[in-house]
Length: 119
Image (cartoon, rainbow, N blue to C red; front, top):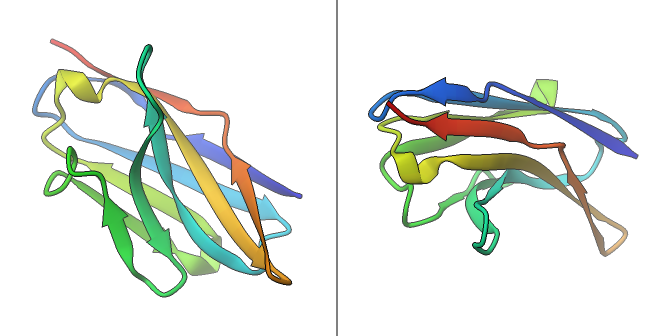
């Protein structure tokens, strides 16, 4: 099993910054990707950013140029630096981890952390 613990959410004014962290523990071998999703009420879940074991990254169009994902592989931790935050970024952000093990994909999720952008 894998446990994911997120931190770093909170309240910030428009234009401000936050940095989310997600630390993985447990059976952390064979990690193929880590990243962040978000889901606002009444909307579909959106992949915000992802980082693969090959160091490739992917971002939602809505956050390109404002958010940066990076990983500390030694610590099995993924970070999301969020700059120039907008009110529409307000929602719960959830960390995920993907493992590829004997040809099977396994997904694990954190409990989520609330980000609120408001003046």
